[in-house]
Length: 167
Image 1: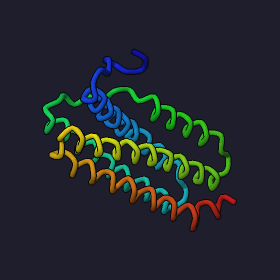
Image 2: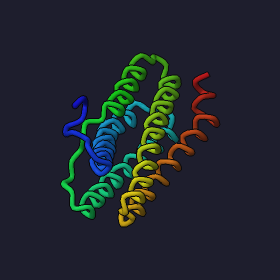
Image 3: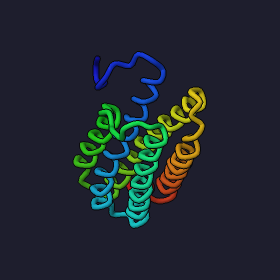
Image 4: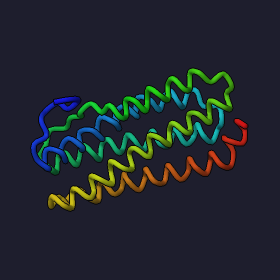
């Protein structure tokens, strides 16, 4: 069975697992962001992380709505991918002695998380359409739009300030 808590035999099982996977990921991100907020020295980066923490908390609630609409129990499935991204970020950040370099490392790590989430939400939206679950698409699309906007803001911040300060 590998990493998964139950066998995936059908497309519906795969969809449910993906939903549980992203729920777990969002919950892990809500635990990781406060640590990044505390370590960020660039005021704009700190503010960006604070804003995204609030968005992530809302995204968790949206996923709980999706589970409810689909008549499923709210639960997460361990996601080795997000665990790995977060672990890598923690190790990278702890290895940075310079505050400005650490900010650049945190920003890059945050973008890795965003890119992971973008792929997951995009997939869930496509699969929702395929499985006739259009009633949850708008909730998933709202989160996907937030993830893309966060990624764009982080890119802009990296290019205009954080990376220059770290260099």
